[in-house]
Image 1: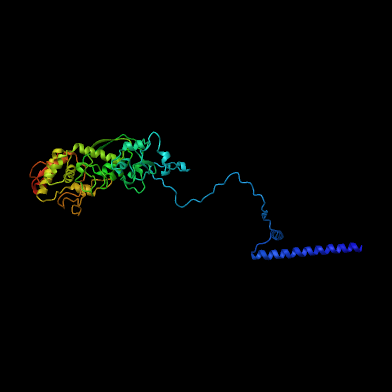
Image 2 (image 1 turned 90 degrees about the horizontal axis):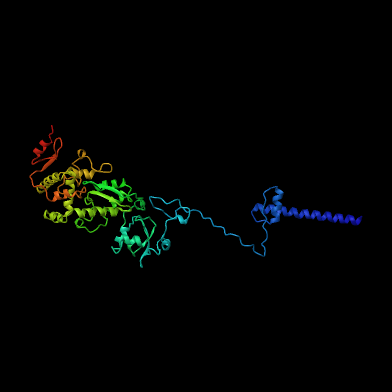
Length: 430
């Protein structure tokens, strides 16, 4: 019994000692956790259990000697979208919503696959070029200094259309793309290069039209370019063919006056530049080069004669009246008087929706260079595209001694007067 009592006492002492050790460990764990210091796994579990918190804590297993087998697939890293898009598509006819790189327009890196084929391989020495806003095939011809033509470019690049898209890759003679004149400066907007064409289309340009009126008519047709592209192709900076009648045009003036009136067919895929050149070719075919000498005989350049003719055209569409009116203006200029035509101010004050300002509302006291009532000589530019009859009238007017004219009372043509008193009497309609 004594031995049994000693054993029981020993077990009881060991139990007390064990609880003391655990108690000390718990107190130490609570102290460490409150201080933010790392705690041993066993002590942390004990402390959490004692607080009664049911949150599970994952156990960290010890590393094994043998690494785990490789995963069956490599996960794809996910990146956050950047604030700036990685590509810009500029087109009137938008591309479908981009879902992958395959949906993007080709880039220079795609050049070998996108254009070089056995059927239409580019000549040796040609280089890949990514189409920029304002580029045209005709512009590349000019950029190559005429060493190639449009048909050669089409064949070398397997093109079935003359319409280009930004980012499209073409093979060109070295430097042709960089030196090519742009169709316009649209700051990235290339509507004109991607607008679908449903031509052939017919367009009629009336004698006396100004460039903006032609542009508006183009916008009403399903052509592959826009009116604003035509205006760019006819502005002062546009490169043009070397026609005799353009040599006297000041470099800072547009092609106002040179768009020959008539009816034209716009073919599919025709560009604004090609359309412009078709009108210039018609001018060359219908206006005799001898007119340049006739202008010189009057002390004019041909451009000045065209300027004069554009005023005559707006005053009358009748060939006989045009020669009479031209005679009046010549007489006034010879007598050092102002031409005093209201149509020049109608041009200057015109705007979209009313390209020819109403004559009855014009303030002729305005200090405007197109005010030929106030300033002598010709206006700064032609004001319309005259027919050949008006150009002929400007160079070969009827010789008479009239200084005034106006519409007859009741219509039926003009009346002409030698003096201002006669002119006022002609205006006094019953």
